[in-house]
Each structure stands twice: as structure tokens, then as C-alpha cells.
Amino acid sequence: MKHDPLADMFSMIKNSEKIGRNECLVQVSRMIGEVLAVMESHMYIGKFELVPGERGRRYRVELLGKINNCNVVRPRFSVKNREFIKWEKRFLPASDIGLLILTTPKGVMDHKKAKKQGTGGKLLGFVY
Image 1 (tube, rainbow, N blue to C red):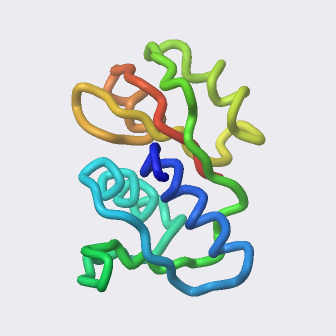
Image 2 (cartoon, rainbow, N blue to C red):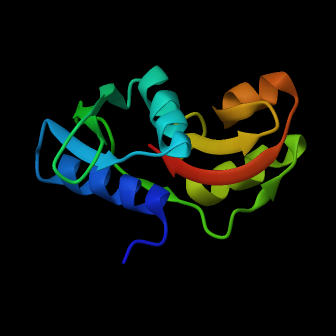
């Protein structure tokens, strides 16, 4: 039984990349769509589109082979604008490599954009 669709999405993408697939199908939700849009804007994945299927609608995600690791962050830690370095050290392999994806009052975005806008939020996941 699936309890965390975001975790399922990250594991599906990571496992499909590891075995060398060019695309994968993931569950549809608004949050997943916004996270995929952030990953697409930073070229971790290619285009994604909504497709009908026998089990309902899904996102077809084009994989580019650029993801080494991606996962959710549980529990959803609150992050202040000045604490991003602490969380980068904890979840990313090095400075300026990878993204922390978070939800803010201004929408879902990566930590670099949140720093520029001067906002904090809750951590959703990371990708590098």
C-alpha cells in the first residue's frame, strides 16, 4: 500500500535511471507535478507529460541519466532562510552540487531560488 506518493516518485525515477531506462511512469498529483517541474528546470529530467493509462492518469517522465541520487526528506523539516547551508551539508554531497526541493509560501522551488527570494519553508526532498 502506498503511503507517500512523493517517495514513490523519487524511488521510481532513481530505480529506472539505475537500470538504464529512457522513461518511467509516475503517479499524478499536484505536488509531484511541481517537483518534476523543478527537476526539469535544472535539467535532471527531460520533459514530462500527462498520459492516460489502464490504471488511471500518470506522468510519463523522460530520463536523461543525470541523477545519481534523489529521495524525500522525512520528517519534513522546517528551514529558515539562513539555515540552508546546514541542510546542504546534511543532504547534498558538496557545495553547489544538487538541489534541495522545498515547499514555501511562494510555491515549490529549489533552495537557490528560495535564498534569492529570502524565504524559508519545509524540505520535501533532494536530487543530485
